[in-house]
Image (cartoon, rainbow, N blue to C red):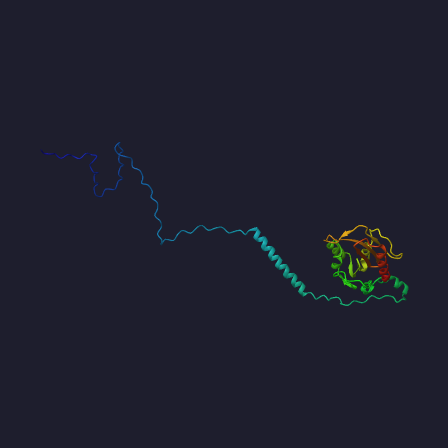
Length: 289
């Protein structure tokens, strides 16, 4: 069986070739049919990165930077201080030195005149009523007496602490002595029979003589001598020695002369006779007067 050639259809036939020398004409757009899809523009592809040998584009230039107000203010203060100090130093350095006043001034002058000795003596401070070695003013232990423990049996100086130890409230008495003008004190102690005796002289400073008077106030005392500034008293009830169960009966006398306070204390196992303490107090007062 033979096959005849089939003529190409007008659609499949290639476009005619223009003759030589004819001008180029734009081709007509293809007809759109139901079997042919519309032609769309090709998508734009991103540009490739520039090669490394190419110079990158320069960033846009920035505007001039304005100075901050705080920085300007601080700079002005610092410069002003430095400039003012320099100007002040230059002015002061160029001034002539100020001469100092003389070290020794003229002594005051008083008109010459006669002094009244009586007026001068009256204006002068009065001497102390009791001065010197207080140990020489103390009574001495009688013959036949013995020492009373560790206490001094001869006239001796004692401290404020030793004086405060004789009292029940040691700390309070020690503070009172040192804050109220305590100056010095002497003491003697002895033991005779069943009696124990302690005689003390306590002196205060001249400006605190009132503290000496305070030791004789607030007590009901019987006079042991007409001229004595003080008195005596005798306990009718027994008391306990500090931190013991041992009891004693006491009697004491006190008097003041100037800045000195004399104290006489007698302790016994039975009530002390008033005549004993009166005699000791009177003899001690006579040594002060």
